[in-house]
Image 1 (cartoon, one colour):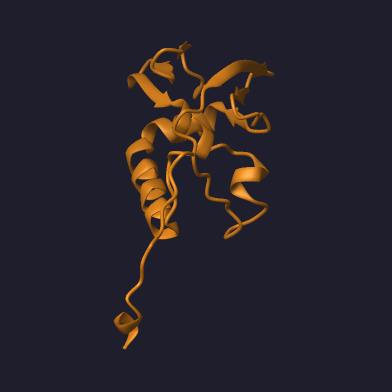
Image 2 (cartoon, helix red, strand yellow):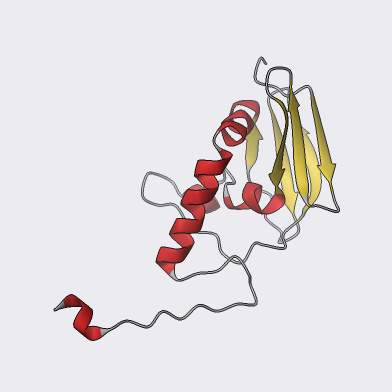
Length: 132
């Protein structure tokens, strides 16, 4: 249980989950970040290369937090997603690598021509001569 945070607080107004650790202090993770990095099969797939890019999650909120044994939390999101079990180790990984994980997520969105905003549609125009 060494990776368990000392405390966890949901900030509803800013839509952030704050995890406080003895050694690194408080780390805030947005609900959107947690939703798009859910450890569920719906997001991660069932193996490498089967990940499903989550789009349109900018306004998602955490509506419930359910303790799962002494090792994890189940987060319930406003879009109905509730199948991810966030272990203490996974929370710690997210806290320690949040910037690179977020940058990678934004890059995947750009490459897919997708958006964080569910009300926005991205259309990429290609120059047919670009491949000549």
